[in-house]
Length: 112
Length: 115
Image (tube, rainbow over all chains, first blue to last red; front, side, top):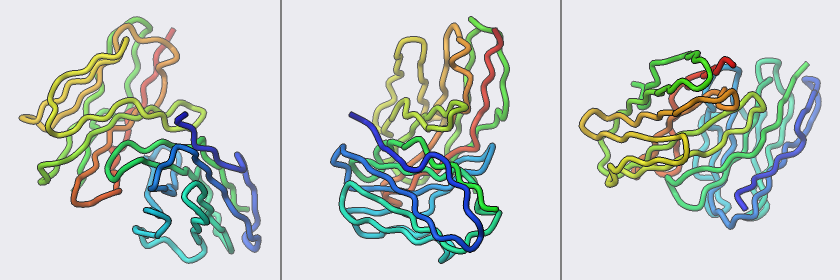
C-alpha cells in the first residue's frame, strides 16, 4: 500500500478564516512533507517532519502552521491567508532520507 | 543555480510515437538519487522511478525506459509507443545525501499525446 490520503480535496476560505488540511499515511514512513504547488510550476517544499520533529521549514509565513500529532498524521493549520496562497497543497511521505516520496492527491485551496 | 534542468517545457507527439524527456542535473555530492514523477491533470504526483548514483544501469518498465549517464549528468526518460494516457507533466528530481530530505525538482515537461 503506497497510499497517502489528504482531506479535504477542495477548500475555499476567506482571508479571516481558520482551517486545517489533513494528511495520513500508513506505510510506516518516518518523514512527512508539505508542499505548495502553483499552476505550471514544480512543487515547493514548505515543511519536513522527520521522526515527528520539524526538521526543515523553508521560511514559510507564520500564517501556515504545521503539526505532526503522530508518525502517521500531518496537519497544516491555515489562518489569515492571502489570495496569493491559493494553490494545490500536497502532502508526501518517504521511508528514508532522500528516498522516493509518495504524494497524496492534494488539496486545492482557494482564498477569497 | 538550478540543480535539475528540464529544458523541454512542452512536447506534443502523435499517438504511437516515441518521445524522450530530457533531464540534466548538477551536484557535487557523490551519493545522490534521481527520480521521475508523473503528474496527470488530476494533480496527484505519481512516483515512477528512483536511481542511485552508483547504479548506471538503464532500466525498462513496459513502455517506459530510463537512461542514466553520469558522464553527462543526465537522466533521460523515454516513452515508447506513446498513448493518450501518457499526457501529463513529468518532473525529474534530485536528492543529495548531505541535504537529507530535500528534493530538488526540475521545472517539468508537459507532454501532450495527440490521438
